Image (cartoon, rainbow, N blue to C red; front, side, top):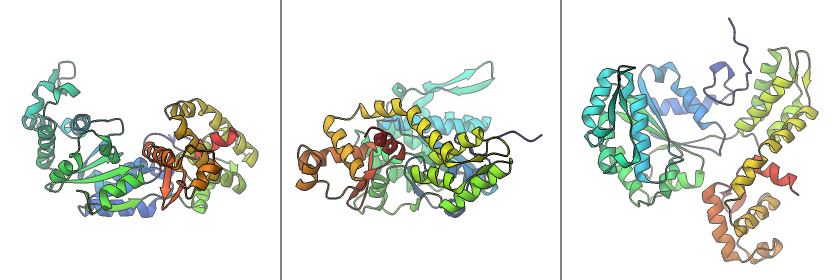
Length: 377
């Protein structure tokens, strides 16, 4: 029995028939990993990095031969939290696969012996790690890597938002991780992140421990014509239609960012009945509704910025592509306090991901924030 599914998927794994393009990127990632290369995968936020990794990991060439682990470290703030997240992910994705792997995990992770228990209902061992259980994070990390080395199948580990390690108070995390990783023979890594500048500094600066240790793979926006063909096909398959101008409105408004384009297409597909067409008027309404829906979240994010940081953010938004941002002329034009305070604010806005830098040109990172600020004019 066929499933009644909206073909524009925005959460969870995307079935292959509803996965748009990324043919070259998927092939490059698969080739690198099957040839024992580490990969640094970058893009702007919501461009589809995780979906790409899931898509490749579901391929038989990976799924049948490798054990895969996904660790999201965005919410971690210390090295101990990193080790906790990593250990939990390895237990959930590797050790839980069999009694043999669970026993090996319990045997090798001696520093976390107190975290192991037993579930009499499920008749299985449990692993309940807490931050206070990690007394020697460096030693525990070495035990986790030792465990992965002894797993019979080759392991592929994705560390998402890897640039977060640069914000830890511990100063030797990069060197420590690099020392362990370069010794591994049974594990390869995908270092994924949405802060391109930070990741490039980590992996392509000759002064950093991870210098030239991973193959670079960057996700750009899906080609507009390819994306329209995908959208048109999925509308047509259900006896629905979408105007080219309507699709262009969605794509251009959201700068081709995959999540946002998918989200509006999903709403449009649901609103259009069989035999009807999605036109520009409908897409404009859906975009306006979506901006309004997210207004509270955006205001909450902005509330964490200082007054100076907000002023600089608004100046960058007004310029669209802001140049010579530290000049006296730029500061006078936008009534900013001083070039030095502007530079300090810019550094924080880059760190927080509100703006991005290409050469010496600054712009907003998020098209949704750009739309919301447009509405405030």
